[in-house]
Image 1: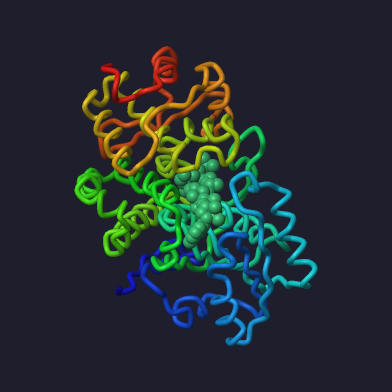
Image 2: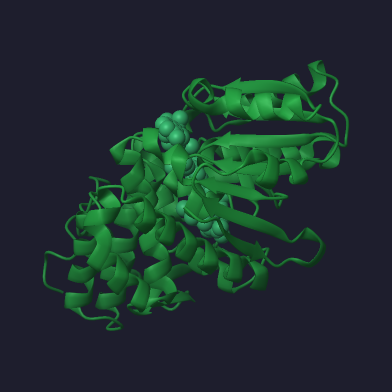
Length: 366
Ligand SMILES: NC(=O)c1ccc[n+]([C@@H]2O[C@H](COP(=O)([O-])OP(=O)(O)OC[C@H]3O[C@@H](n4cnc5c(N)ncnc54)[C@H](O)[C@@H]3O)[C@@H](O)[C@H]2O)c1
Ligand SMILES: O=C(O)C(=O)C[C@@H](O)[C@H](O)[C@H](O)COP(=O)(O)O
Ligand SMILES: [Zn+2]
């Protein structure tokens, strides 16, 4: 598989995204490792599968390598786990010119990135995403952080990596449910800004679910191209970047209500995007058949399409924790049409409550 390279253009903080299969670490990793000390942050599932290869290449290049193996899962995306990284950095006497290498999915990447943002006020950081979700989304753009029991990703920082290595080979061991969770964020890019991509996804979803390597690489490339462009235009989410939050205000509420890790992030976002489509239809911006279209592409990706049993009032309270709330007012990402997201506070509360009460969006005719 040929290696494709994208660039996140952020002046002195610009970096490449390499997308390929069995990426050469000498060629694509080593040039981005600053200093002599490398802390590989991974977890108990990924480390036994892949860590040795990275450690060996780094050792052979003369680097001093230490490891921090975190417990696995969203429920461990906490300040306590973050402290394990700081403990490892301190006990191994790591200096300010070290590099933290994140080897794992979005949970590992978000925590390793936050550690890189804050250890000695900032050290180098490289992302090796090992899930589809982290390859198409979380490894790019520099949002890092941990959850608070009352809200997702509430504590964190922006910290751009020096490079992202999206290696399709790593996806071979990924469980089917996790692959589908990654497809949710892929579908997101299509819904907010690229109807042609949605048509492509509708055409090729069977191959994507069956893990056709060329189709997966194309989905990663097209997704990262969208993310790289949006992040370059609005690194700190002052405007357009909030479009990447389609489905997330609903989805984050589902994740925290159900208990972190019960619903995967991608699953919660999938249902959240369907709820956003439902509300957009209630506002008259899209048609009922557009909502059915969103439901169908999510269903074809083996994602959930029914809303969990959360009372509308509880849902609304949790949504109020969202980072897009400004001056106490909720902002949502909705759809003006399929392929055009919009960030808005112009929605009727009654219509939102109807959406929160509809457990089967795209089935009931609006
Ligand atoms: N920073 C961002 O911009 C951003 C974007 C999207 C999501 N996120 C965050 O990312 C997290 C979700 O990431 P995720 O979906 O990668 O979940 P994850 O990191 O929990 O990984 C999913 C599961 O797959 C396992 N795994 C990872 N790679 C594997 C592999 N190659 N083979 C077998 N098993 C593997 C993990 O150990 C875990 O059990 C959430 O916390 C979400 O909030 C952040
Ligand atoms: O990169 C972004 O910007 C995103 O919003 C990507 C999302 O998929 C991701 O889940 C992000 O972590 C959510 O951000 P948050 O600011 O709502 O926590
Ligand atoms: Zn997300």
